View 1 (tube, rainbow, N blue to C red):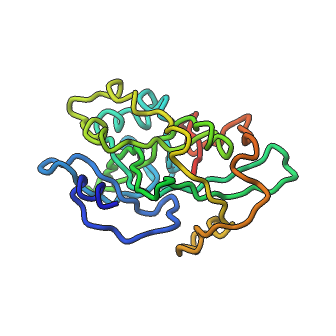
View 2: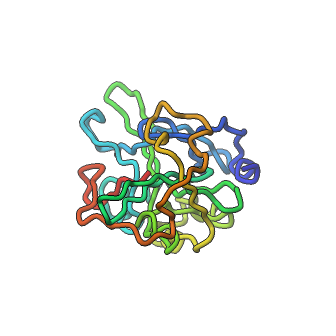
View 3: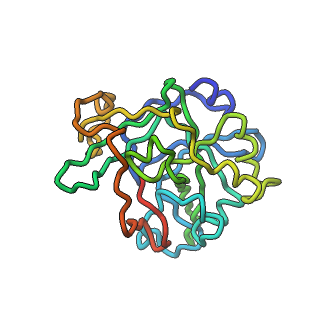
Length: 241
């Protein structure tokens, strides 16, 4: 974590173990006067053109393959790309056999390091001048390992690519498209955890404890839904996490 914090020029942030949509998340952006600036933004992007956020379904994720073309994300892809520091993410394995129970997993770097997800940010302003900073996480097709749990995974930006990804002045979306790819197999490890993670009130480190399960992350590919669940009016966005 220290390496990321030094590069982002931010102080250590208190640990949080169960972040859900609508809660604040930490993001790093290129600042106007400093190389890195840390911001707390609401998880669930609200495009600037939305008239009333109360009537707009939160966009917690964006498909990296189409974000540069989608009305909800294309401006942020060009002007407001971010990094989202994290120690991992949760995902559910939903077996093709509906008689088997679904199983949550805590997916983290195998070496215990911090990762930086690719994010987007927008600032929504109301007629009275108040502002809401919000953001989302970009996803990509899963690698073979994570694909045994879910067919999508967050885009991870490597340390050496931080500058390119955050440089929205000279790097257009097409220039950083090569960064929007799945990580290699073996980077993450998947730990089966209890269904405590499904309740926002459970926010302690105990929700990441390993549990015994009959469904392993190498037990066969997860089922890809025939129709993906929408998180908004933008077709093609998948509800990950």
